[in-house]
Image 1: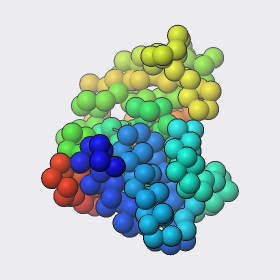
Image 2: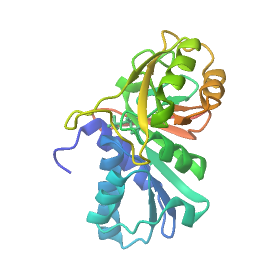
Image 3: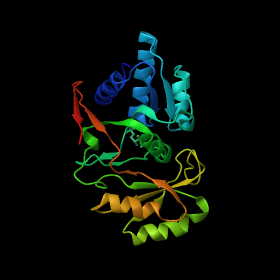
Image 4: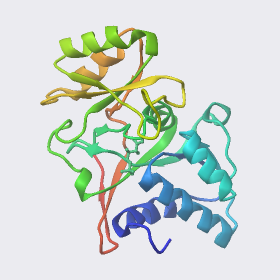
Length: 230
Ligand code: 5RP
């Protein structure tokens, strides 16, 4: 793990140290969650602990399997003991924006299935108010995208269909849906926006994670970790 970002690695190591033998683990998606998956694999190899992991994306499933971590769909595991994941923004009340990797729907199912949902970030993800830096990714049924965009505009958002970088046309999620990145100038009431977006027909889910994080681990480049809890 010599080339891993030191702040992300510090947060990942802190999270993995909380895992005990026999636990059912939720595994997030993204660069920070991937580091945590690698650190978990190292612990399994070094200490022989037995865990089973529920991955939040095809990407995390492939990574975990390649490292020898047993994976099972979250629906087969029921209540998880602990999940770890990254985030795009963290507010002072530990609400989150997630979904840069378009995995937020499965990530939210995993977060809500877990006794502990541990979020791994560096300082750059901490904001005063959600929406400062990142759009809210909304996962949408393709045939409903124009209708959903219109409803998002009525909520004050500026929706933008996420386009592929190494593929022509829209990004297609692991569920076969499209992603509409929606910019809001200021999210004053994240819980109300959460409910409003969720209630639009054609929306599968979105990247606002309200009241879900049990702890946020803020890794620093010197290897220390600040633990934020409510
Ligand atoms: C993927 C996510 C990621 O967890 C989030 O984008 C953070 O990623 P990274 O750790 O690479 O900054 O929500 O859908």
